[in-house]
Length: 520
Image 1 (tube, rainbow, N blue to C red):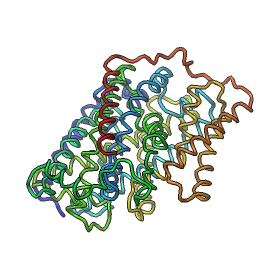
Image 2: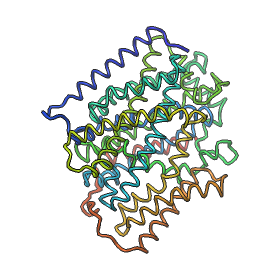
Image 3: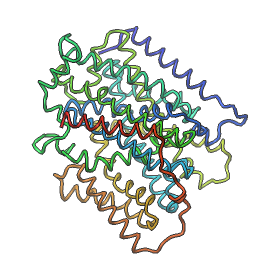
């Protein structure tokens, strides 16, 4: 499939328009240029609507749209649990974790670990995140984005990846987080519009022109197994989504790690004007997450009926774009690229933040603010170059990239969640206890995988979490108490939320209860 000239024209207008907006936003009123707070945290001035939109734009990318749609093609609506359970996780993050982070006035997650524990814990986790962001997240986004461009536009995947990298650099390298966050608003609007339109056209095609509702009814009738939210042990995809574990098991660990302690996600909330704005943005993002399965999963399920012989599940979403009329196809292609470059920009900005503030700055503590900003920009370029050349060797042999990402990050996720939660809410936790949890997470994960290979990875994550929790508590109790904790005491943190946030939280719970009751 190739784009018509009019589609290409629409796409070019979008690209140029976005670059113009980004350059306008990136202008600095300061004579000496942006400092680290301006570049890495948008001057701590983001309003709630920019935070919410940027959270979703950073999250929804190639591995989400392409990868999750591919998983929808294979296993159905059950994969939507990643989105719907994330909504309630966001509410919990907004109420219980954000107040702690904002009170500590941090730039990065490793910085909090330094305040709470010591430089060993900070450096260990900073290096881990840098490796994961470059070799897992960036490579996945570039690889799947390149494949999408090849399928939709007929451009070779390598040149597609080069374009994505260059585009993200062009609008984010100079302006930093502020340029990324405000242009994300445009990206999210386009993404939601294009995604909903594609889902409508897909359902209409399934019903052979009888309308969206008729198409949805046909899908549920012909593919009833694709609408089981809780998979039974007999289901061939049970190892990926093991039944009730999506509600009470390892998925909680994965979601809390991703939404609560993931730098390129939480960085938007750290850049808020104040705690109340951050919490409003989190609640806004939670409702957008409830909408995402309609955009990213439903087209994959429809592809089972419309394109049943696809050689690769991750081709489901790009193939569905053949349904688009001329002009609209260019707009939806722009929405897909918007999601990809937004995530690339968010990830590279966070990579540069962690590298500059947690790795480089301690080595050269007396440099100017502008020097650190330059170092951050260089780190962005280096990370993208590495990811470009490593994308195909690392991901080229995988059928469902989304599941690959979950499997890999799941090795370290339990330890990260234990370190943060225990460190935040138990003052007796020590640095050695934190390091033991970090090392134990990898050791326990690989050990269980070898000795109990049939254990679903989500159950393994839950079990490793409990083992890391026990290990950190035991090591902390066995060691000497430390006096290196410089983080703000919880007695100085208020967990009271505004009425609007509480109402929004209740709404999320009610909607999720209805959804899981309907498709249990």
